[in-house]
Length: 160
Image 1 (cartoon, one colour):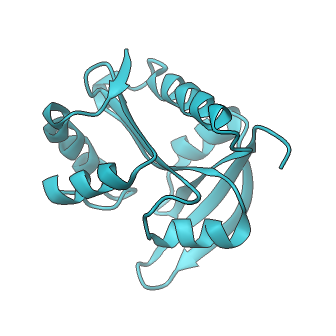
Image 2 (image 1 turned 45 degrees about the vertical axis):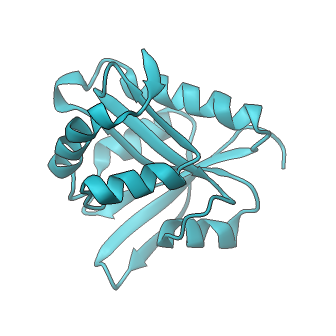
């Protein structure tokens, strides 16, 4: 069942985030609370077994990925962070969250979904997931300041 992220989910989210921190930015209680306060979309599934946090193009949140995307696209819904607990992977939870995220974008008249997936370190499973679910690569970018490289993806929902 998909629902809002509540403070009771924080501990589980932080544990999951730490497990996959090589692909995600680190979080603590304070930074998670700030992230959720700024997020346009923030939902969990199955009592925190998975989460998806996203932003509209005009969200009051400054981040290098949003900055890059805002320079490329006018209107979008950005998937900032999706995490599925190791024990819940392969059960279709990410797909359910993405479907819900897509419904939200369409209800707001947002024409595209966008995200980034690490290429250094490479997140091969995430690349496969996004391509399988209709996302197309846009561009590879290397951020020298963080030694991270990403591939940006987009999925058209509506004509711009």
